[in-house]
Length: 171
Image 1 (cartoon, rainbow, N blue to C red):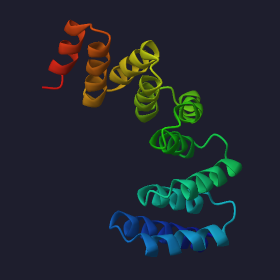
Image 2: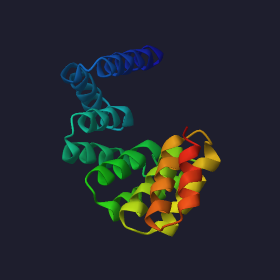
Image 3: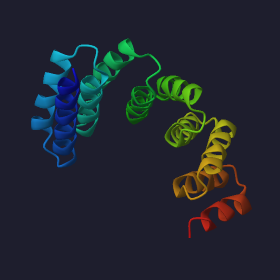
């Protein structure tokens, strides 16, 4: 049992290393094999989803992330990645469904907070966007993208002093 666990860990690390070196096809082979051999192993499904996101194959990525959620509906990273994929596809309401699930699991998830702010910004729900962007800054005061997005919002609603103040924080 311990040897099997070490072998799985070795294969996971090998697949991640290949992924990080942009060797997607080789990485896919490793994670496909893990997925086939260990049907309840989240890692194979998850990394196949991540690879497909990197390759901009969002349909396949979503299928893999949904496979993860069939095993563990509260998987923070699978929910986050689904939210990000839907955001990339400009399906903002759908994006928010998964980002909200992440925030129920971890209310301080920086990516979920920031991307919720972006989704609301895209939906023109500016007050909600401002709220999520401010929460993002509460978690990480150095998150410059939140300040830039807040600056854009305040410009749009003609609150120029607030826009300038947010842009200054980036400098």
